[in-house]
Length: 396
Length: 108
Image 1: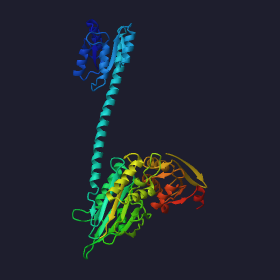
Image 2: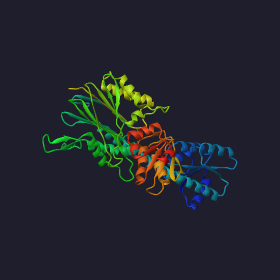
Image 3: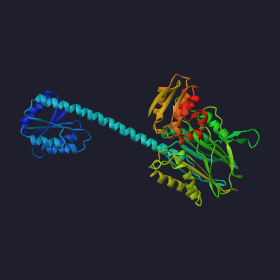
Image 4: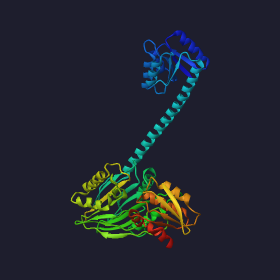
């Protein structure tokens, strides 16, 4: 162990230095505090200082204070060397941060033993610092990865707000950087728009991974192949799958395996843009809200979640929109958003919020729902992923 | 997550002593219940009377226990309103027999 001995009396310095050498320590010496500081700055291997109190230029107390306040990038153990009658100096030294003290009259073996104690503490400190450094690095890396994944999640959300005869708006607020909610809408042919919103159980990375996968599975490939249509030999050479068929297919393909308890709930629906007819398969997900000129009602049907149980039957239901009608689908993070007093936001309040703002454009209406939720939640850090998709059918 | 067990007319009843069965407690719930489970193929009664809120992770854990029973029946008793609503929405009331009380479940 390298020991820095700080002592202005030359003879004392020499005796101590020789003894410490005999005990196997590598000894560096300084005549006063200022010189010691310079050596500490230049020799990063020094972590043990044994210092006299009264010295010219910079005394032992000032040196100790500086060492304990200044960041050398390492832990430095400080032993104060004093005379027997310097009780006050010892107390003062311990107060300003000295780790130990020893009187010059003590046997040298005791000084060596105390250096040994210091060495153990130095080693513990070094180990802790290294672990901390590794943790900090790992944490920074994870945080960076999460933020990148969150950006990816955002980039997967729809960017355009209009399809023929239909206008869309949405809000999406994830609970833990990135979420398990996903939604999209796409035109399947000149008459048909498909839209969905799904919510993978749990939150964070595991849920996000499945939601990313599902988004890709439901998007058409570059060549136009899609899960949502099937090829047929007669023109127009495709047939649009019914919502119940799409959901059954997803259930088969994404059945949770082994120990995984992951599944998702979803609404998958088709809108005929010519007639306003909506066909919905609701798989364990909260129902849709349908806003007409005069009221807002919930359209809901029970159904099994997807990927939870094999070979279960799904159903679909239909209803008609009038021009100007709006539909809202959302994750349960909206209705199960709790106020600080543990009151649930609930479907009724959501319907009221939508009704109160039905005179607004669909975009502003969605924004108002988000603001209402944020003020209900007292902040934009939600416990669960919050997503909300609105569409207005303008009619043709 | 605290659970306790009792025997009623030869049926193992597992009582869940928690207000919420959610993402934070789902894993411990699953492990605790699995540790208390009888041999494969046997049925249990799951007493959820104290649970006032269950989220998707909680439901996933209950279904995982059901799958782990390999055909053994789980009867669920004492569902509070929000949990009952979740079971109805997700059709879990068709997978699990739901009863008001342990006695009703035993008679059924």
